[in-house]
Each structure stands twice: as C-alpha cells, then as structure tokens.
Length: 91
Image 1 (cartoon, rainbow, N blue to C red):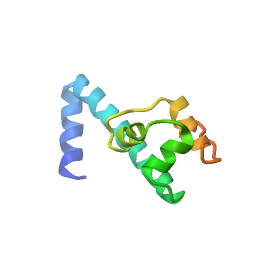
Image 2: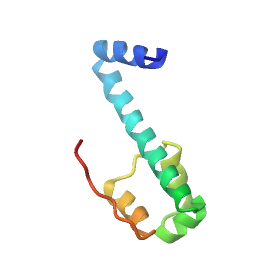
Image 3: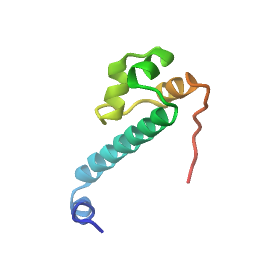
C-alpha cells in the first residue's frame, strides 16, 4: 500500500466523517477519469463533447477535474450524445 492509502485507511477507522468525505472524493476522481478516458477514446475535445450533449464546456471541465459529481442522469445524457449507453452495474 502507498503512504496515502495507509493514512486514509488508518484515519478512516478513527474518523467516520473523514471516511465519508474521502469516499466521496474517490467517487469524483473515478468519474473524472472515466469521462476523460471515454471522451479521449471518442476523439472529442471537451468543447465538442459539451456541444453534442447540449451542456456547457464548464460542466465537462468540472466533472473531469473532480469539482462536480454528476448525477446518473447527467452522465447518461453526456454518454448518450455520442451514441453510447450508460448502465448501472453492481460488482
């Protein structure tokens, strides 16, 4: 494990609020990376994807920088604008 993982695990045991916020941050990061990889795979700039999805470029930027944790509905709208589908999966 990395230093960060060790620290986060130890602090999470002692501080439920830290654990909650750390998990939220991880969700935003996962979403950001997922959208960036998808957009790049599609060969689209942030501006192009925003235009296709009829959202602002700043929305795409906020998602990709982890400043925004989008709803499933918003992510579906963005993904579906490229002809793909987004689905829930329990793993």
